[in-house]
Length: 60
Image (cartoon, rainbow, N blue to C red; front, side, top):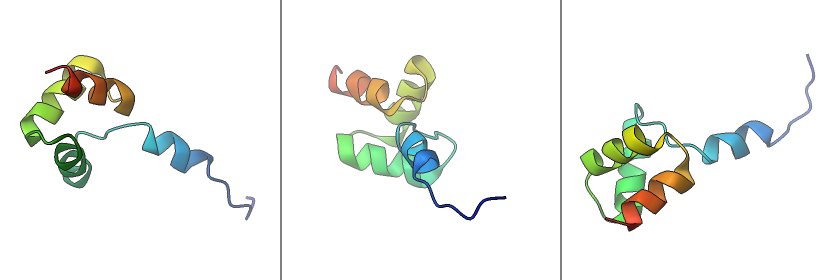
């Protein structure tokens, strides 16, 4: 196993919204000025891509 530190995992993780993680849902809700339920609904309809979720929440 390599000890090399890469940012690949982090970059991929930042692109996604984990709707099962309360802290990620709360962050996105504060950022977009919407409720947590609206964030979860956006993830359900658009998938967990952060860009798609934010676009959906902007269109509301």
